[in-house]
Structures are given as C-alpha cells and as structure tokens.
Length: 169
Image 1 (cartoon, rainbow, N blue to C red):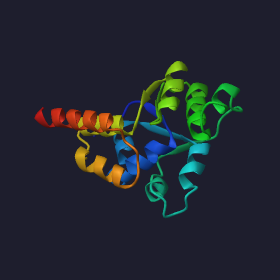
Image 2: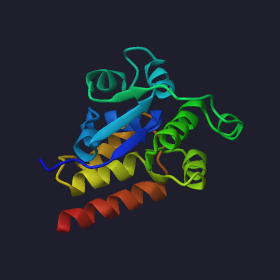
Image 3: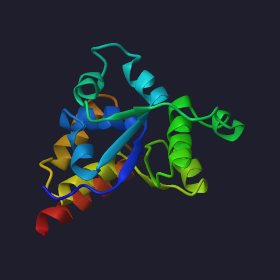
Image 4: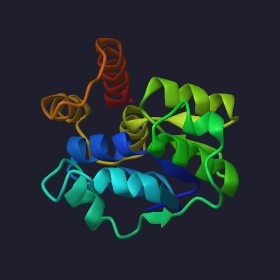
C-alpha cells in the first residue's frame, strides 16, 4: 500500500455512516496517514451504547487519534453547531489540520468559512474506491439508508454517477 498522506479530523455522523456502509472505518485508514477524533465526537459515538450503529467499528479502530480541544469553544462555534461539529472545527484550527470530515450542511458551511477543506462520508467512500479500497458504492449507500442515515436523492444520484465513472476507468 502506498504511503497514506494527510490528516483528517472526523465528526460523529461520518464515523457512523462509514461504519454502517462498510462494516468498519478502514476506508479512513486507507486514505489518511492520521485520523483525528475530538473527545466530544468520541463521546457522541459511544453515547448510544455498545449496540448503537458505528460503536463496534469505532472501538475496533485503535489507530484513531482521540484528542481533547486545547481551549474552550469560541461562542461562534458553540452557538451555531452541535458539540461534535464545533469540536471538529476547533481541533482542526488549533492543530493546523486543513481537512475535516463533516456531513451536516451547517457544519460544512462553518468549516469552509473557517478556511478548512471539507469532505463527507460519501466523498470518503468515493475517494477510497478510486484508490482501490474494495467498496461497492450502491450497496454501501443502501446500507446507510437502511440504517436511517439520511441521504438526499441528489447526493445518492451523484454518488452513483461517480461510482459508475470509476467502474469505467
């Protein structure tokens, strides 16, 4: 496997979505040299108990780097986002990490306004597939929807179109 460059800070929903889609968080490991999870996100993932979606995969991913924020959340993050999203953005900014993985629209917007690059669970799946990670995108999307992960029809259509393009290469 080639060197996995880059670092990403990951939010709760992508962790749950990726675990649901593929049964593990290995797509993140395949793509990035470091995967940082703020402590607030760890607490959100584990809050549902051991049977909650994503918990088993999270617990098995010993390579995840769980980190506490260095300082209290600034009001603009604390008042506009949930705790996990705010912690992802703050962790990235404090540690000079350029990329965050957030699925929610408002969190993605605030991250971009904060100068960060943004990906989401679908982007991770597509990029991982492009780089040789074995994932069937249509099946992954179906599993996500079956588990109650909301994906707009536009996002699903885009993902399926991109997956079809990958298959023709």
